[in-house]
Length: 103
Image (cartoon, rainbow, N blue to C red; front, side):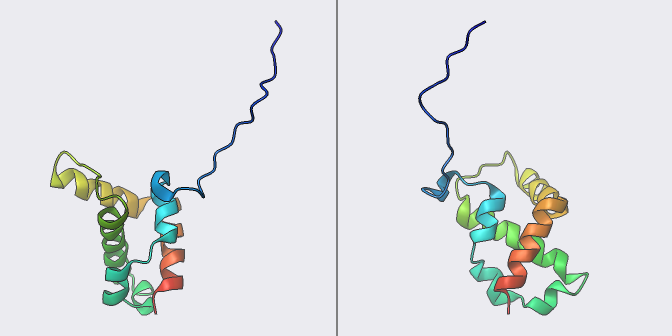
């Protein structure tokens, strides 16, 4: 079997447009104006408040970065927020970003 090497190179350049960026990528670049106005870095140290901060951040991220995200119901939207808040990889990256931007 003979295969010919393509002359065109394949690359994914996401820096040109954040429009197609993932939720994690957008979270790491978000300013979270509403969350920043409501919470402080000390809230991230409080085990009860950190959950509220996380869910508020995800909610704000959906509203600001993914305004066209459609969910069949409000319950499905809440389930998605809960899923993302519990995802260890996303949670860690979001908390790291929040530590940098919250005062």
